[in-house]
Image 1 (tube, each protein chain N blue to C red):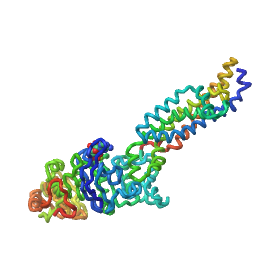
Image 2: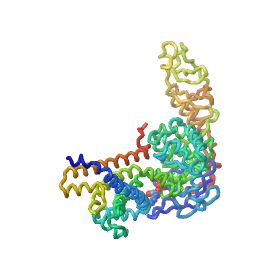
Image 3: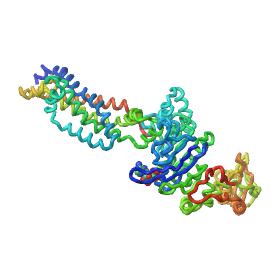
Image 4: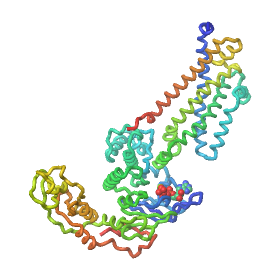
Length: 380
Length: 213
Ligand SMILES: Nc1ncnc2c1ncn2[C@@H]1O[C@H](COP(=O)(O)OP(=O)(O)OP(=O)(O)O)[C@@H](O)[C@H]1O
Ligand SMILES: [Mg+2]
């Protein structure tokens, strides 16, 4: 657990970057700091590993005041990932990953094994091991940055806009893979971003900071979207917050309609407007218009525009499936990808109207963070 | 030209002492310039002082410095140590700035990553910052080497012999062949220094020669 206790940072030029910050990052969770440029996110993060010393207040790591620890030693137990990865250009990829274990005095063989293991863990080909960072793409470098931070298996990780220097497609991949990793690793993470979508995706809880380094609101993502504390937070979380909040609402039992299907390679004499095509294992492949078919259905006849939602997924996914299907019938599958039925948009909307929103907390006022929102405002 | 045919082997002993008088100060100067350059980076206010003082040293005429050295060091007037010491001053003068700028060329995010991973000050300097400054330092070293080879020839005027002797003698006795040989030998020596330094630099910086994948 990382706890900020009334932490203030005033730089010598008088800038107050962080103002009386009280914040707790629970063990094993991702706490996101989000806010506009210059609101003190990086400063807050760097005060944890004492790259910046607080002007007043204290930061506790599992109850120990970090001011009482030796800075260099403490840092070896805190993984740190930054925007451009900050890899050592003069060191090969394995050497980069093995940097902290080397500082810790591990023996060579163990460092080598650990580095190669991590290389694969973050989805890199072992063949890049002997390359230098400049020979890797930005996305690959960022993966190495993550691997390097994980090398000595630190319980705590600090991540400063780790995925913001790569293109959106790669960013999404890196985010998904990192969330999968975190599922296994359960690190205590503070994650800085200026992108609210990333904050909502990555965070178990999200702290919104305003310029001047004051905490505007701290809550879990669903609560933040449904109950922004004030205009600043509401503005910051954005326009389509109502729609995005649906991501956190599991689909209740939707009224599913059975869908008549066509197997790949079959012909039909039906004249329905749209028919759903499935493969041998009953997995949806796409929609066809029978009137345009001349013989058995082939790959080329498929309309693949529609998204597919899992029955165990969110209301947002179910609604999107209905809206994106050319037939307007949203395809719902089970966890193994088999078709269970279809649902219409109005039925999803009805389900949304019946679903509970996260309840407003009585003690929730603008600027006063709930003590442990992750535990309290779990979306229903 | 017959002079060259009869006497060309003199370039070996003279060239060797020329190489020593120019090369040894290059090494000592580099070793001194590294902590000075580091200090210039470490204390921002020291940077202009250190850089301009060392720059000023370079403007002292070499003959004056050669003659001053025995007074400062208490050595004999003909002692080659005077030349080595004076040349070291020039080398330091050139390299302090180079080292400081080389260290300055290390990307911020790399330094910060090193600090955040728990590299202590000295280790960070030796393992991260200095290696990354090598390309800039090598470039400065090449300039210093050529400058040293050229300045050392003046030492003939204070009786320390090296390739400069050929120039002085060739001029005094009006032997164009000797002059020519002296110039050619100096050029060749400067070239050897350059090739050696470049080769060492390449060996030390394998990461700079990797094609982007
Ligand atoms: N060393 C410094 N000296 C003076 N002011 C500083 C220093 N470092 C940061 N600041 C100021 O402190 C404030 C917070 O900076 P910080 O880098 O923490 O912002 P940030 O939230 O990380 O912004 P961004 O999203 O742009 O990275 C800014 O106004 C910045 O100008
Ligand atoms: Mg920042």
